[in-house]
Length: 140
Ligand SMILES: [Zn+2]
Image (tube, rainbow, N blue to C red; front, side, top):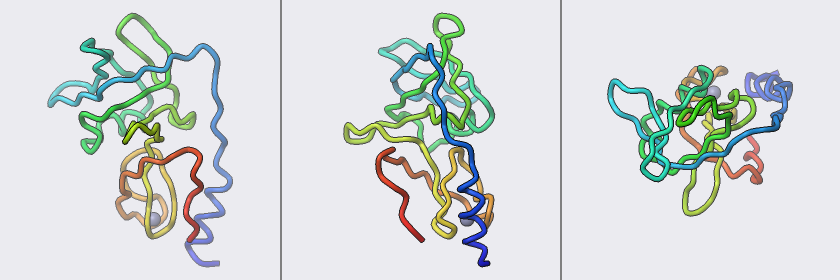
């Protein structure tokens, strides 16, 4: 078995995304300022963002600074939202009017990940690859 096939097999075993009830969808501009936690500017109002570690990785990805961004989560208090865990696919980016999932792609292994960093298979850096949820992944 080649390394690429081994990776594809492991990926197929990943859990499927699930959606919980009572969630808020919030769209705004992702603001990243030095020394401050990233936040969402919703019509001029800052909304603080909380999330798990992979989610924070995305929020701090400088390639997404100033992006037309959308998060799905629960309002913990006015002006603060707790983003759903990374496996629920709760981070979106708008490009040319299209709502795209924030994902990362390894061109060597054809593996998609959901937080910036190195590919867990080949250890190369992944590239930001906003994805239309309805478009299937390219085949190796
Ligand atoms: Zn890889």
